[in-house]
Length: 258
Image: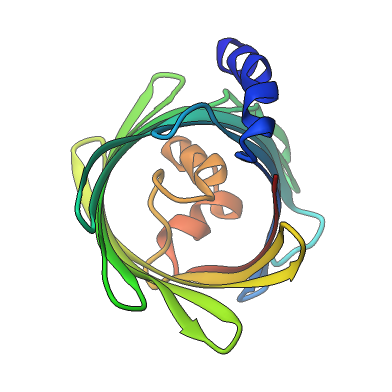
């Protein structure tokens, strides 16, 4: 609530500087009969030249091969991004994000099961180098998941290239590896993403892309952590299959910047 209040209090100043960004995102997947649907709305407000406050809301619905089996949950998240250093074409940024999940509900043949809402905190350090025609960089991240009595940690390293011009689109490519640790065991998982940003109107942009995780997504550190954080409970294949087996999704994001 504190972050939301700060966002509201800064909205007038941000609008005057045209630094308000509203976005709606849809993510969808069907892998080996498993389906996933995610909707997300978010607001970002730049309070000064170096600081941006963010808040968002998500809804997840996962279904198994038997379509009557489903897992659903909601989440809200808030965070802050701070530009720490600028040296010529090089930038260093730090961001912090907290996701507060809602109660997870699994409706399966064995009955109706509920799971205590998880909490995920993520800190990221991003280093960018602007070059001719593109921006290259890397991101270091650390996520901590708390769900009931369960605890998990996720360390991430991502390399990416952004702003590659392909026709009217600007393309971003990213490859990341995560060390996912729960109950003392560490599992390494890689995630590859691609996104193309297209202008579709005045101050309006559409972003089309997707992500693929050959060995499944980590419990935290990705846009679907509101679902995968529940894997620490070992709640069954409706959720665990997105972490333990090959998975991916397509996404469409509409962004309005004012």
